[in-house]
Image 1 (tube, rainbow, N blue to C red):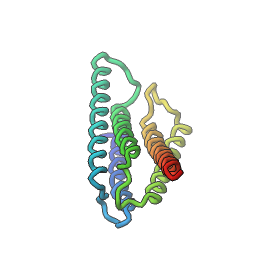
Image 2 (cartoon, rainbow, N blue to C red):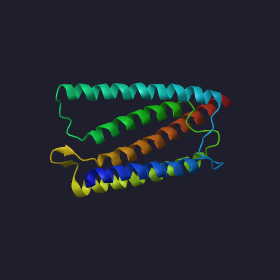
Image 3 (cartoon, rainbow, N blue to C red):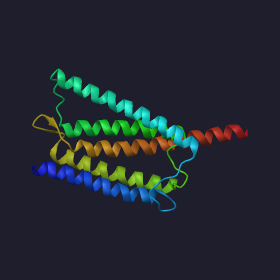
Image 4 (tube, rainbow, N blue to C red):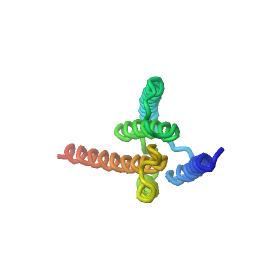
Length: 177
């Protein structure tokens, strides 16, 4: 195992550990598990199904690209990370738009703040890396693009949450009139 692989593995492990603390911080009651009502559970199940099939399609496309020797100019790490980000975004956006993303015991303001902080940190790391080292190394897209993708993912989540909240507010106002 080389230094790059050790660094990538450590980054993933640290990210998972931080995620556990973040999950706890999202919830008003300080518990790891977020509570959802029956409707939210059904919608989230559908969102997981869509995300799963999107990931399967993405993986099939990667296999086909490999079969025809298509050079995607990036590491397997980055390609797999892109698939995860796409699947997470499908799940999150579908759940948000169908009122199933924010749990019953979730503090929405804390959630928004943490998402914003995560986005800023990842965008800063990604932009700094691209600025210092460039996007390409030896003709390959650098793995640091994963930080930019993660930052964009959380930024998109915040924007979709804002749009959904604005949409719901507008609907409530039109119903009152």
